[in-house]
Image (cartoon, rainbow, N blue to C red; front, side, top):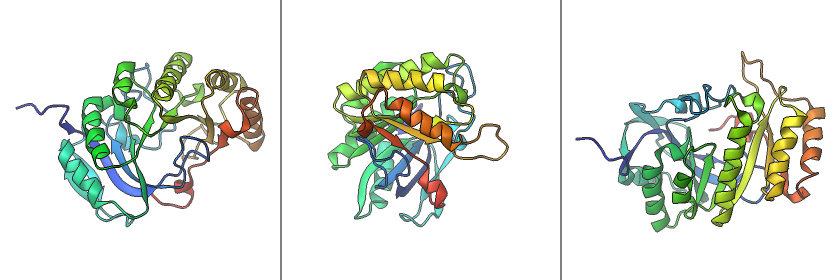
Length: 274
């Protein structure tokens, strides 16, 4: 019998760590303890916008739509994992989360991949977690159907929307993708979520493209985090020079107040934690 999508989902990994992105802006959980639930499948990597997704993707294993197994941290923070079979039920997933709970836990991070690719399952999971009093942080980049985001947005406490610039190569029409991502920010904002936008910049990012993103965020006063890409071997895409970073923060300042602009790096990568 085919398993119902509302009751079962596909996961890539679950672990306990600290949020390493986001700077100190409203909506960010930077530096706070979270349980990370990384969902399997990424619509951008699967060609939703005409490419194979972000060239600098830092979670390529999560691009797979229906992996046979996923990995669960055995004990919070110890970075030792066991294998679990996919798909998994909401009840099983909640039990795993409960077992990884620590006294300093702030929230549950729903990340990916793309959580909204499994929106029915995610919605049911959120309902169960809210019953238990958990705060929820959504990291999302794209959904074609905005009603899917509407379905869960009123239940989310914090959110990061990844806005892709041209250098990410996530879409043939990158402006169309960015406009959809801004609409996602607006839906979350409208539903009372503390939301911010994050844009990863590289040596290939241009001032013209970044100005476009900044102006879109400024129009609706969406806080904007600027994050230099983390270096990756074999890629032509590399971090931008400091001169470009400085220039971009000043461009953002033309459209947003200073407390709505932040610079972020992937701290968890720098100190070698999950």
